[in-house]
Amino acid sequence: MAVRGALIEYSGTFLGPVPNIVVFQFNPEQLVRTLQMAPSGADRGQRAQTERAAAAGPPTEEFTLTVQLSAAEDLGTPGPFSGVTRAFGVGPQIAALEKMAYPHGAPGLIGAALDAIGDALSSGGQQPAERAAPRESLPRLLFVWGPTRVLPVAIQSMGITEQEYDSALSPTRAEVALGLKVAAQPAGDDLLAQGALLYTRTVKEAQVVAQMARGIAQLPSIIPF
Image 1: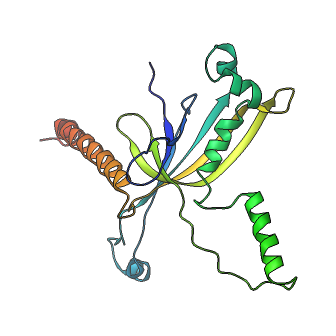
Image 2 (image 1 turned 180 degrees about the vertical axis):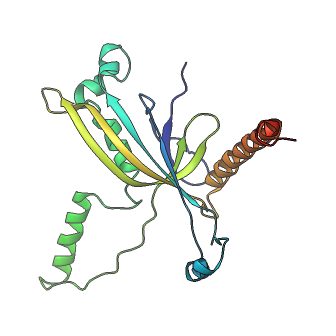
């Protein structure tokens, strides 16, 4: 069975009984990674006078990928989810991904409408005073890409292209372009994110050691002795 990538939304210090999981139906064909350096303030002012650039911290890692969704697999294979697919197409997968982009506690349209009506009634029809919007935390996400990469991430951008529809205009095929940013310094209480980041960095360090051994073995081919 092929290994599939996934995005997992969780709460607290563990996955919990019912995490929001979107397993990629088809693994994206490519994943574009960008490491953005973080120069210090002193470095920006002195770069012209120094040969070695200083950094304020480790680079931030961002990557983009496109998730492809199709209802054909569920519709063509009898199973527990075929009825959901007939009713909504790939809408549930899209909705689950969208949920990962919204802050926790963000009210729905009905809740926002009821709040507005309540404010109007309590103020006697007068314009209510502006209330400071509470700070809301983004969902905690893990990006799983095989056994060597499990990373805490935040969604930076999401582009949804619905490509085909059924007779009820539910999308049956879609592409979701995701821009993700790795959380280089997870919150102190997010033990799952800290563990995932440490695990992935440990695996990467092991790969570096393996490459260093290969590089030493290849020295005679680049440096004549």
